[in-house]
Length: 314
Ligand SMILES: NC(=O)c1ccc[n+]([C@@H]2O[C@H](COP(=O)([O-])OP(=O)(O)OC[C@H]3O[C@@H](n4cnc5c(N)ncnc54)[C@H](OP(=O)(O)O)[C@@H]3O)[C@@H](O)[C@H]2O)c1
Image (cartoon, rainbow, N blue to C red; front, side, top):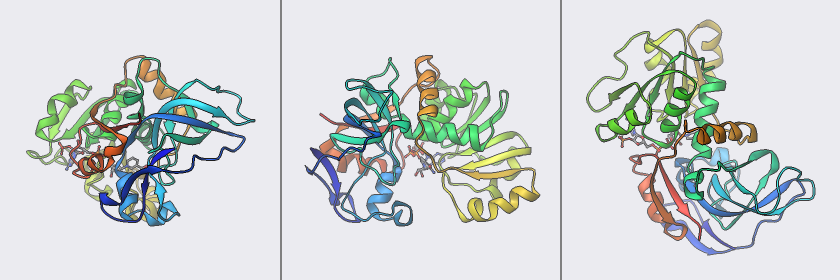
């Protein structure tokens, strides 16, 4: 099969579009013919060697967490899917494997694709959608009527966060740059703060959840913006959230949490329903053919992507 091999740690030049062996299937796994996958910042962090402790694998590796495609083969113990099903999902992004024509996935981590999406739109959602969902629902313990702050609301995770919080009946304040203010409002944010013009931490005691999707704040900086029992949830596990967090959470009513997104069929099915009911709409900035992955990474690394970058696998 054709795949993108990240041959060593380094710049985009270490990415190669080449022939490699197809994955070998276990009995509880499916082989998916990938029609589209998408770029997440974790992909280029792994490529550069910035996530060595979490990957547990050295290059050469196939990168990629998201996929949308068609079941090509089902292992003997697979019960809920058949060859030909249109499916989507994320694999453990630290292990990767979706920048390829074929990827193997576990049955409990896969989902049927939303009926109203094409492959490219579908591939843009699983990893960021699951991150936002698991952050808000499990870590932030989101309740209907909460006031949720989404910092970085024009990125992949942030746009999913805004829409999920709105779908759950919350008031949403989003933070983004000037050029994305209109989009954030269109996607559901009730209030939008332009980080180039205002201090986003100026309002005190107002948020039930401060979801730091872009992860450029910290609990100590953001806690003043939280209501007395509010939670700060970050996408970047840090010394503060991981080591000091349990202690802070014992003595303070305001909590600190971080997310490490996990594949989950159950959560994917919830996202599928939200998509089909019109609550969750993918935003794709650009689609590149798989072989143009170097350009796609270069764009993602600017930190200026609106929504997602998708890779089309022809
Ligand atoms: N822990 C986990 O499980 C997990 C899972 C997924 C993602 N993540 C992490 O979460 C972070 C966000 O991921 P992503 O996919 O959403 O990234 P992304 O799509 O690349 O984010 C880009 C967006 O961030 C906005 N942005 C840049 N600087 C900003 C600032 N100072 N304030 C507010 N917004 C700003 C940009 O808007 P402008 O162009 O307007 O500045 C752009 O729209 C990454 O670090 C990623 O690695 C972690």
